[in-house]
Length: 373
Image 1 (cartoon, rainbow, N blue to C red):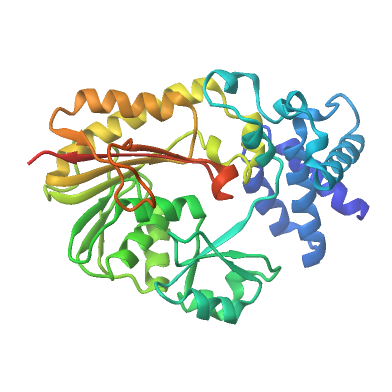
Image 2: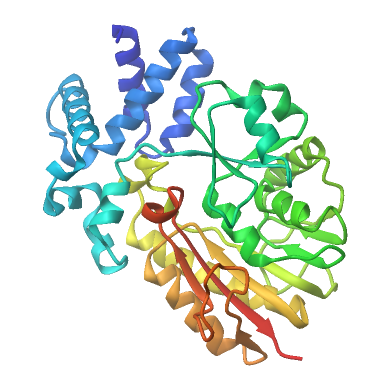
C-alpha cells in the first residue's frame, strides 16, 4: 500500500466526523489522480478502519490504527470464533443494547464484508448470470436475485445500461415481494427516494397499472426519473410530498408503501461509519417522523387495500413501537400477515424482521395492515 493511499485515507477519516464517509470518499476520489487499483485500496482502507473502529486505540497515530484494523480483519477472516461475544460488543455503541435484540450472530455479521446483490429483469436471472459471470442465485423466494462475486465495475457494463438489472440489496427485494402488487393495481410509493423499490414494484406489476412516486427531495425524484427511463419503467407518476396530512393526490390506492427515513442500523454492515455517528436521539426523532408518515398516508388506502411500513433499521423505537402506535391510531385497519412468505403459519405476525445474519444483506423491519371494507 502506497504512502499516497494512506494519506488520502487518513484525510477522508478526518473529514468524516460530520459527513458520511462514503460521500467524503467519493469527493476525494474525484479530485485524486489515482489508478483504479489505488482508488480501491483507499476505499478498502477507509471501510476497514470504520469496521474495526470500536477496537482501535484512537489516541494512537492513524497509521498505527490502520495496522490494528488490518490485524483484526485478518484475525476475523481466519477465525471469527476467536472473538468472544464480549469482544464483539465493541462493534456497536453502548445505546444499542437497550434497543436491539443483540445476538452473537448479528454481531458477527457486522465486521463481515457486505454482499453485492443484483435484481435481474423478471425471469432473466439465469441469462444475466451467464453474461456477467461470477453470479450465485439468491434465496428461492427471490427468483430474480443474484449475488455478484466478481470485481468488474457493473455500472459500466452494457447490461446495466440496457436496463437488464438493478443493484438492489436482497432485503429491499424482500420488501417488494412482501408488498405483492398485482398487474393493473394502483400503488403509492410514498417515500420513493431514487426509486429502487418503485422499479421492483413495477416489475412485479409487469409495467401495468399505475404507481405514484413521491418524496420531499426533488433531487431524488430527478434521479428516480433517470433510473426509470434506463429500466424502461413507464407506469408511474411523480408528485412531491413533504409527509404532511396534505396528500399529493386524492387517488385511493390498492397499496401504499411507506419505506420511511430511518436511522439505518440495518445497514451498518455496509455502512460501518454510521455505527459511530448514529445516536439514540436520532432514533427518537426519526420514530416520530415515521409514525406521522404512516398515519397520514393511511388515508389514501382504498377499502380492502394494503398499507406497508418498511425501514432498514432494527431499534424497537423505529420498528415494533411505531407499528404498535399506528395499530392503535388506525381503527379502520387490521394487521395483515404475509401470504407470500414461505412456510408462513396461520395467525402469523404481520410484523417481520429481516436480519443481516440470515439474509446476508441489510437488516429490515416490515409491518402490514389491511383496510377494512
